[in-house]
Length: 130
Length: 65
Image (tube, rainbow over all chains, first blue to last red; front, side, top):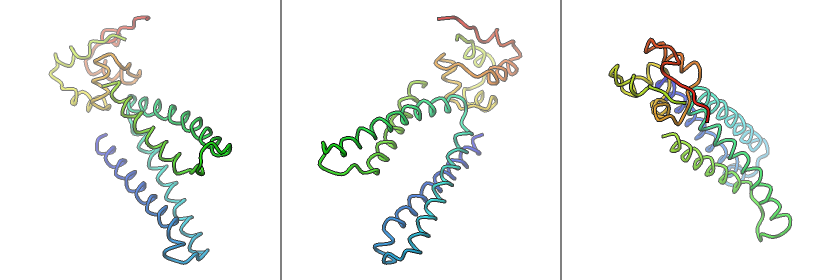
C-alpha cells in the first residue's frame, strides 16, 4: 500500500508540474518565443490540455488508493470547496458585472481561491480526526 | 461507536503502524478508530475481527446517540 501510494503521489507530482510548465509555455510562448504563430500556439494549448487530463487521471488514481478515512477527509473538503467556489465565484463575477470592484474578475483569482480553500480544509479535517 | 481496539492491539503487542499495515489502512485511520472519532467500514471491521479471532460485536459496540 505504501509503495503504491508513493508511486501515485510521484506520478501526480510529475503530471502537475508538467501541466504547470505547459500552461506557462502556452501562456507566454506566443508572445516571447514564437511570435504569435497560430499553429505553434494551437499545439501548445493542445499539449497543455492533454497534460491537464493526464493530471486528472493521476489524481483520480491517487484518490482511489486512499483508505476510507482519507477518502472521507478529501470528500468533505472537496464538497465544501466546490460549494464555496460556486458561491464565491459567482459573487466575484457579480461584483465585476455591477462595477462594484474597480478591476476585472480574473479566473486565476478563483483558481488560487479554490487551491487555498482545499488545502486549508484538508488540513483542518485531517486535524479533526487526529 | 465504542470499540476495544486499543486494548486488543496492546494485548497482541502490535503498534498502530503494524496493525495499519496488516489491515491495509493508514496509521491515522487506526488512531482515529481507537479514539472513536471514526467508524470503520464493514470490510475493515471484518478484517480486524478476523485478525483478533473475535466476533465483530466483541470488538465494536453500537450505542444510539
